[in-house]
Image (tube, rainbow, N blue to C red; front, side, top):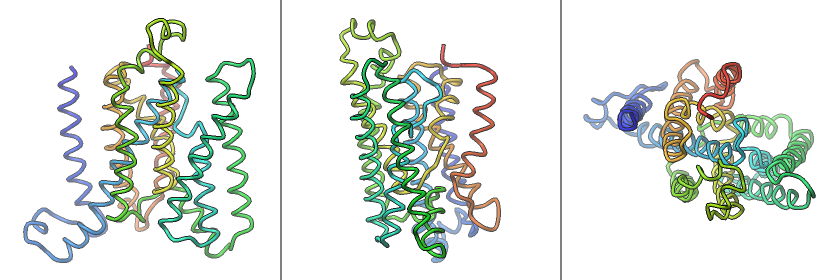
Length: 322
């Protein structure tokens, strides 16, 4: 069953890549590439290839992050943005656009504020007495999200309504239109570095699903392990917002799809979430840039797909969590 799922998933990834590279307002065929058509090659190398690779990387990162958070908090409703990373990064984007930073500094500012938000959440949760640590962390994350959301609203209120306000709004709705070849190296490097520890620790995430006392009795340092997973998973979501804006629901929905497919064993959930998450965002991006004459922000499409699917899961029960 496992080999069958791996083979099918690899075939789906391959087909999705070929399809995504060809589809768009300027269709590219294999003959165009083989014949070295100058215009087709320019579109392929400068626009289509960076976008397709970025979509797969970002989808993989969001799904991996969501699977990890849902596992360590033992809660299927947890998303990668629970610790305030997306809200903090969104504030960083809005602030950088307000001060007319260049695109590289916008990404850097978003990334830094995403990490700052998570640091604030962790510090705040430590000072909440006599509560379950996981609950304290979630409540602290909600407070930090609220704070940074209010700051984003303040920036929107005071900024130029004709130029900067639309820029902030479109960035925060998510999209890959600004991704270039130069972005792929830092984006891929950060996401890969953050995903490797999560892939290596997927065996121990099964132990974290046990009651705390049982996990400690098995010799696992649960506090240290959770911190490592939280830092890496947050790094993934912060990095995504800094490069592509807020793309919601991927980290919430894809891990559920994977659990339905392969069960709740994290040895399989993490790698399959990475693969299926990448394919999912590839398909969403294909729709975003091809369905209508103008490009639809990714965050809108992921919400339109994610909300009905998640409602279906809630109605049908917690399949895959047993």
